[in-house]
Structure formats: structure tokens, C-alpha cells
Image (cartoon, rainbow, N blue to C red; front, side):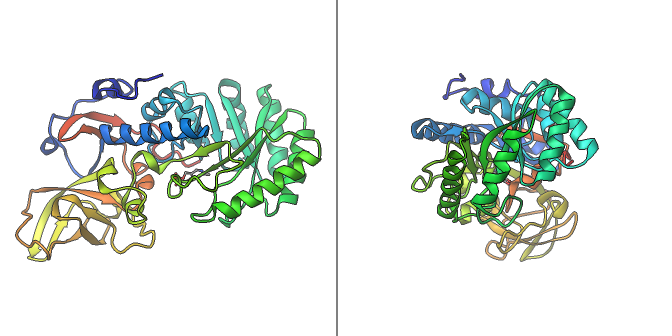
Length: 373
Ligand SMILES: Cc1ncc(COP(=O)(O)O)c(C=O)c1O
């Protein structure tokens, strides 16, 4: 296992770095910059917490989409990773990551063929919430010549995918257990923020009903960064999936989950125009920051101007409110924006830059960028 006090050099060893200069001023913008020390600290803090709680850590790679960070997470003690799409799993498998839980129904002949190919070279676990999905998974398992582990996805309040009741979870668990080539591995949920207690009640009821049918429930897996530090409603949960915790973002700061000092990814951008004293125009718009609001006002905040807001975006322009410090920023100055929601930002760039404080370590290709199928 990797030393939890690893040096930046050790962390960099997980990546194939391309030289892009040595200081932030050398970088072309907009570009996401990731402070590896902050990311590493976020990973270690959570892994230590999981170890103390006896909770298995299965981080979601959809936030960083980087094989290097997936391997670092595993080296720190994660017992597998979570992926949301087949493309993410393929990108991770290409770098030797094997134990993966794919938390999205695989539907359609061509995707089932891709799943079969993945299952023959990696340790794949998947989810299902209907008989139709289970039937497809059976075909994929047969085509791969290897059993597939299947979790029943439960909608415990999110109102997204998932069976709607403990009784429905029980009958689907039975179907999976009786299907050749499939192994019933347990229950999976992604609870709505603040609804973990409701999730726990649903899962406990489903588990009891499945036990009563004579089946085992090997793993109950839950997740979510916003509630990750709340321990009071985790009884019955074996495994926890967190994604955003590696980088954090403005939405998590606003929720009180972390501070700005814990935000590892910022979007480095340049002031390109100062048309009026109260407004600085930057070169990061919706194509760099996304237009996700997550209930917040504005599209991100700038560290260099006292966390003033990017109050509007067009595709390539960001409108930064500098009314509180009208003389602070000039054309050519760089600012680092903490985005509202960091996960989709990773999907917008072919490459990100790793840094250590103000020192640039190198650029790295985002392995699963655009892997949305
Ligand atoms: C199924 C599933 N599990 C885990 C996560 C991780 O959530 P977070 O990024 O809040 O940690 C997500 C996030 O979208 C998810 O969809």
C-alpha cells in the first residue's frame, strides 16, 4: 500500500506527464489545474475514515476520469472503483484497473457486446432494476464465458433509476440468483442528499426480505460526497462510493462539506478585457466551467479576487464581478476559478495540468474524457 505521506514525486509517478512549463504563467488558458497535494490529502483523509469505520471504499472515477488517480486511490486502500459508463470502464481497463462497479443499466445489443468484452478481461460488477436489463446481462455473461456479478439498484429517494420498493428488490434479486451466468451481489443505491436515513430503512427492509427467501446479500453499497462525513445513518452499509471528494467544488463548500482550501481543481483563466471597472472578462465561459448552477448564484468564484462571482457566462466568455476590488485585475492577469460542479469540467478538456502549489508538474491526458456511452 502507498505511504499515506507520499511525496509529490511519488504521486506524479502515477501519471504520464507532458512538459508544459514550470509555472502557472507558462500555461495557455483556460485549463483545469489540479493541486496533487490537495487531491492526495482529500483521498487519504477519506480512506483513513473508511478504514476506521470498517467501510469499504469504492471511489467513483467519473469525477477525475484519470487512470492515474484511480490507481492512486487503489494504492491508498480502495478495494475497487465505480464507473458510470462502459467507456469509463474501458478507459480504466486499458490501464490495468480491474475491480469495477458499473452503476448504470447496460441496455442495447452493442453495449452488451462491449460489456462481455470487458467482463472477460476485468472483474466487472453491474446493476439492474428490471427484468429486461437482467436478460441483457445474461447474454453478456454468456458471451464473455464468465459469470457477472449483479446488484439490484434501489431508488431510495433520488427519483432516478432503481426498483421502487423493497418487495420489487426482492423479486429482482430472486430473478438474478436464478439466472444462469449471473451472481446476485447485493443492493446498490445512490441516495438523495439528506435522505440517507430513508435509504437505510428501504435497504434494511429489502435485505430482510431477501434473507427470508434464503438468499445472501453479500454487499450493500451506497454513496455521495455531500453526506460522506455523516456516520449516524450508515448501519447496514458495507461499501461507500464517493466521486467529488477528490477535487471538491464550490457546491460542496457552500454545503459546508469542505473549505476552499480543499478544492484541488480550479480552472486557470486569463483576464482578456476590462471594459468597465466592475467587470473583468475572462476566457473561461460555459465551455470551460459548464453552466451547472446546482442552486447557486453564478458559475464559479475566483480565488484571486476574494472569491468574487462569475455572474454570467457565454460559451467562451466569463463575466467576473470585480466591483468589490475594481483596481485588482488587469488584462493579462490570471485567475483561478473554483467551479460550481467539478465533475463535468473534467469531461470538457482533453488534458488537465497537475500542479503542486504554484509549481507546474506537467499535463496529463484525461483518459475517460468524452466516455459517455
Ligand atoms: C451511482 C453513483 N454513485 C456514486 C456517486 C458519487 O457521488 P459524489 O460525486 O457525490 O461523491 C454518483 C454521483 O453521481 C453516482 O451517480
